[in-house]
Image (cartoon, rainbow, N blue to C red; front, side, top):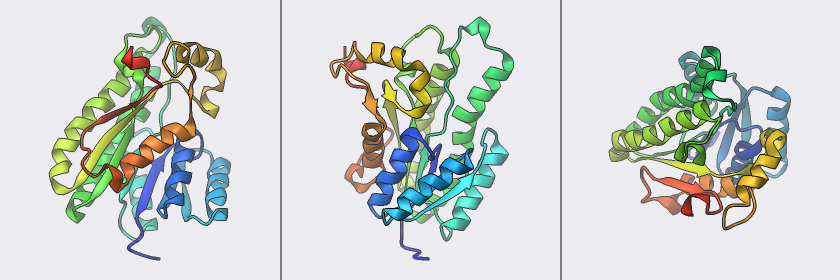
Length: 247
């Protein structure tokens, strides 16, 4: 295995935005490790990348607590000859419901996947990147963190936490060559948003772009932050929302 080949770990990498990121990074010659729950989707993603000439592996992981994050980090390091150069914290869940309708289990599940998992993946991988003197971490947030939208108290607040953590991690690890940034998507068509497609269209219609994003468009922003094209970008939040937050 080529130890000089850059390696990216992408959580939630078997569908939607994560899969689009994996394909784009693989096309740039980066080895990708996709992590997700569904083994069938994981194998399909890896096969598609390999059939296109890229290098890819799949790790099945439910994620959701510190232990699962540590296990995933160790497995990824073992697969990549001892180093992860790019971490994309993309896995997430986005239930909707008024605050009084959400129970403690809902709270714990959302924050476990959306906040705790990225937190402990960074805790495992960022120090190794800093020791090496280089690395890139991209956190996938949401414009839901920018507004007081009825029904998204858990999702929006969890993404607000990620926005803050991005700044902290940039301050902690940036001096040692680790760039940490956030991509904040607006309404986006993916497999996971098919059930709320009407709401996505309605929200997107209010933006200057007048349409939702594709997964590939969000992935392009993530790929930009993952490469040296963004070498002087630290602690930033790149909003990719068709202009919703601009009006």
